[in-house]
Length: 242
Length: 179
Image (tube, rainbow over all chains, first blue to last red; front, side, top):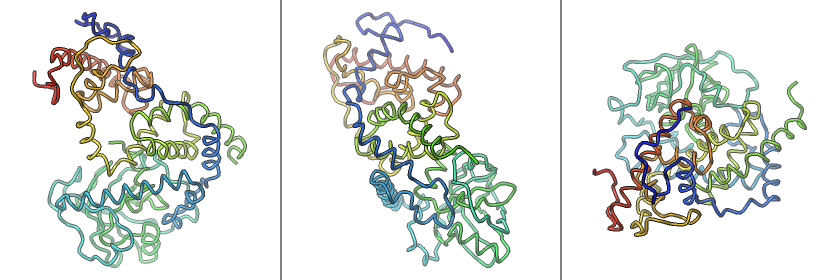
């Protein structure tokens, strides 16, 4: 711990000659100074709701996370996320197309024109060229709950928009690299059978934006890669704080 | 077989008893009451799901979770909020001395004049009463960086307070760094 220097902090009238005084002065501006303690009954109810949530997450249930369904607090939180997502969509639409639009649900499906505005432009951290990944040939039947430490431990992680799904190959345009070497373009190859389960587990769709992580050239499925929204976005944010 | 349900619940309840109130205050300091309530629930949910990873002492780590959950919740509104923050900066008060426990409007002004990261360091230090190593954990930076940045932030804060006093109530402090 470095000891602090008093430098030329000699002005008595400020009352911040020492760290203690400075801290006390700052605390006068604490917005929570007059906050009453939380209602114990409400807190107990909240804790009970949380402890009744399911700890397991499976890719098949990625679309609707039932654990939120039960609780009013958590439903409110989820609604806030949806609203924030919608606001983000509106903002990026106004942003003259420099940001890839976040995934906007199933309606994106039919839009074959992939957002390619940032193809040669200022992509974030992507190296030139193409990164090639594969998908696991089998997907485990049951998955651990996606967690930030697991994703943080992946060799590559990025956000990208699917520009094409052709045969055994999914092509993504990288919009942001979180870790590792990731090219402007990423192709994910998979044998036909595995491709089907890859598409199912990540719900890859042309035009959709995805968070993808991979290790040893293999995409982490099982809830660790998927649409860039809500819960997965939060987990990636925790794994790669900005 | 991992910890039994009952053990897990017990651990979580003990953790919650320790962190609910501080985290609630942390959030109230940084967002509106509704968002604070939602993000508190999100934060506790993360704690519940990642209970095995919660270190001891837990609070700085939980502040880190709250920080990320809040950032997530605010993703879309952030730009608007910054604008609001600027508008909220009002003319500095004329008096230089105040009672220690009375809100000193200069403090908000000086904090608003600092860079966001610097102001946050000072809040963690003064409001949450964290030391440099705890701040490091909450912000996911190294203790050394936290220590150095905190020292710098304190100095800049004192400088801003001086500027406000020097401006002497002429309302010349917005924008901040022209000298």
